[in-house]
Every structure is written in structure tokens, then in C-alpha cells.
Image (cartoon, rainbow, N blue to C red; front, side, top):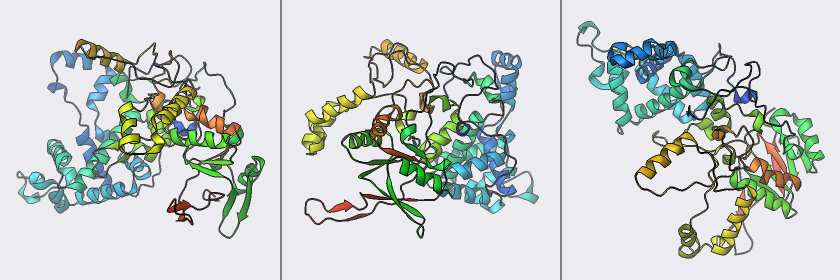
Length: 477
């Protein structure tokens, strides 16, 4: 989280920014995570070890006085992971994380509810030498200091993959939830302590315009079978309904899966050439006035796998957009051209004709022009200011990263949707071009299967079936 980039603006709290999907809902009282009370006790013990309370006696005098004079800091230092309801962490994990990872977490938590399971995963640290009548302890009964040591070992133990994966997932979910959750007033007690503020008021600078893709979009989650069918007909699509298989068969020339930097450009060019194009997007459609700038719900709603897509060992996390406009909606506006050396490698060394220098360079220029890429930046973010200052002190050359926004643009929250509407993603450029040329966009619609068949000619081994017929299943009803 970036405190420097977030400034609280005036305005009343009853006028909150953002679409309901991009704000935390009211506090849950019922849960469907499926973890037992013993599992939750083990989970709470792990969370407390991840974020233990900080004893005031461990602080130097200056820091101690600073904490005692600040109620928010004092509360933050006294709090710990055990103060968060484990039901809430478990619910986020069960509903947002990858199922295979959740299964691993369930196994590890269940083992930790038993003394022998704790011995298996934690080693001899669970031995209680002071109390021989209870030689083995289950995880929640181990001292906080020893639990911390166990987690430190899990973080490094490649030979104990179950424990490591479970620890990495619980750590990611718990810390993310702890620092991003808000109450009904869009407040988080930890924010004052760490100096983090977020703009939650309505953005008065945004002109309330019609959504630019309105005339070409069908938001399937908001429609039923009858209205979807009528909307498709109204938008010029020819379709047949197969009631036996519960599908619509739509006639079109091209289906573009995804609406991001690749799909948006492809859809626009195909539609401009006169083809009937359908864009399939599994995410929702949002416009600038919808963006809440709240990290938790924005991450869950607009990123692939709720922003929790990781390698199985938990070492690497992948950030990809999952909303109409894809990565162009949630990126930081950086717009880098392919370096000449890479183009040379692809076109000459690898012999890929598509990347012929002249043609590929012209295509890049066309894309950059449409999304208004500029190398002039009047105001830089706090991190970039520090990075520039450090590089200059070291005598290193510093240059500006080109970006697809205006020279004066600075909102500090483009990675959760540009609230000013200044960033030129595909949702306000290429997809608008596609819709202007009669393309139709289906949101909340997932491509589940592509069918290939052998070609009759020898030029290509495979072709994709259904290029003129596209099936859509009524999965949401």
C-alpha cells in the first residue's frame, strides 16, 4: 500500500466512491468456509505468530514516548493477529484462493489440531519439558515465541512443502485482509497508525457521461435468458436457441477471448475490417466513477484469481487483470516498446516473419498513438522521486518510463482502476473502436473450451472449429 499516493479529500462519508462490488460489504455473521472450530483455533495461532503484539518494553525511549502519545499507534502495537476473527480470514481464503491451495491449508490446519500432527509438522519444538504429564503440545498450545520459530522454519523448508505452502497462503491472506478490510464507514484502525489514507468521497471532477461501451455491451450477470436473447438480437446478432443443451448458438465471424491489451486491439482491427466480432470477457465492466480505490475489494474483483495467483510453492505471485479492459485497466500506465535487440532476435534469429522490423515497428507506433503514450511526465509519484534521487546520487542515467496518460496525470491509484479516467486503457480506446464498428461484448462470460480439427490443406495442421458459430450456455441461471 502506498500512503504517499493517497490523499483524503473533503466530503461527507455518506457519499462513498465506487461500485458496490468494489467496496467491502457489511460484516459477515454467517460463513461457508467449512473449517472446524479446532481448525480455526490453529489458524488464529498462526495469525498471532505472523503478527504478534509488540511489547512496549522492547522499544527505545523515543519510540516508546511516540507510541504512548498516539492512541492509534498504541492500539496498533498492542494488537495482533489473534484479534482478527479467524472465521473472516478463513472465509476469504475459502472463497478467493485457488482450491488446491485451500485443500493444502485444510490438511495442515487439521494436522495442527492434534499433538502427533503438530510433532510431524513442527518437530521437537512442540515438546513441553516443564510439564511431563503433557509431553506433546498441539500447535495452539505452543508458546508464541516457539510458534514464531516454527513459521520461520516453514518459510525455508523446501523438504516440507505442505507446511510451507499453507504458511505462505495464510500469511498472504491474513496480512492482506488485516490491512485492507474496512468497516461500514470505510475505516480501518491500522490505517491511522501507519499513516495510510484513502480517498473515499465522490470524485466531483468526473463528468457523469454515458458509459463508452454501453451500446455494444451485454452484461450477462444482470440479465436472464429472455433479456440476453433480446439484447443479442437488438445488437444485430443472429442466434439459435438449443433448449435441449441450454445454449445459444450465435453466428459471427470472429470470437475474441479477453479484452485486454491483446484482445482489445484484435477486436478493434477485426471489426474495422468488416467482420462481425464478439468479445468474451469473464470479468465485469467498470467506469471511472465505479472505482473505489479500496485495495481489498478492488483486488478481489478486478484481478485474475482475486490477486492470489501464485506458483504452488508460494514463491512467486502473478498479477493479471480480470475485468473489461484486462491488464490495461489495472496496470501502472507504463507503456514500453519492444527493444530493437528483441525485435532483431525474434525476426532474424528466430525467423518469425510476424516481427519483421518495419511492419512490427509500424504496428507499435499505431498502438502507442491510439492510447496516447507520452514520455513527458510533469509530476512523478513518491517512489519514483526517491528512485530518481538515488540514481542521480550514484551517477546513474535516469529516464522517464513512457505511459498512456496525459503529461499531468497523477492519481496514485491506477492499479485499482484510474479514478480520473485519464489512463487510456482498451476500455476507452480500442474496445470503443470495436463497438463503433458493431462488435458485441459479453461480460461475465467465460470461454471454457476451444475445439480444433485437422485441416484439409497442408499449410496448417489444425484449424479451430466454430469460427462462424459460437455457443453460450445459460450458466448464471
